[in-house]
Amino acid sequence: MLIGALLLQPALQEPAPSDAPQPVATMKQLMVDVIHPASNALLLLSSRGGPSDDTEWREARRSAMTLAESGNLLILRNRAATWVADARLLTEVGAAAYKAAEARDAKTLAALSPRIDASCTACHKHSRPTVFPPGR
Image 1: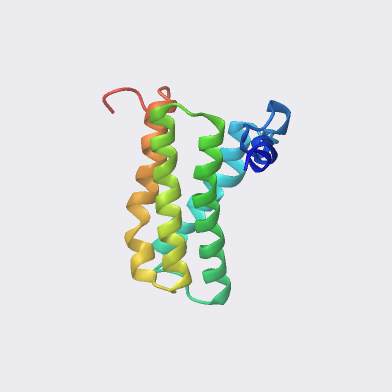
Image 2: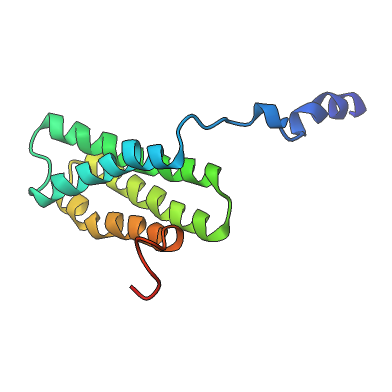
């Protein structure tokens, strides 16, 4: 039993800092090139009455998954409680949108539009005070 515990000990230790993921994109690049296009694609599809063919449903799924996983990327970048809570909103609404897109449920996808917008706005209010001044 002692031997087993000694063999497992390295696996239970925290990874060395050099093993930690190294970001490739800046926060601005992540927002401009990944998150913003994905959220806009979903909102545009919804505003047009929802996806109408296989290509648009694939775009909805891809954009929704991008939002869901982007929330996780944002959490890796900053562990502050408010930041994590805001990023989780993005992950949750992205996951819900993905499920709706998988089910080809245009009504549910459209109903998620305000939550998509709210997840972005919540984070920007906390993290971009020049864009969303307090009280606005």
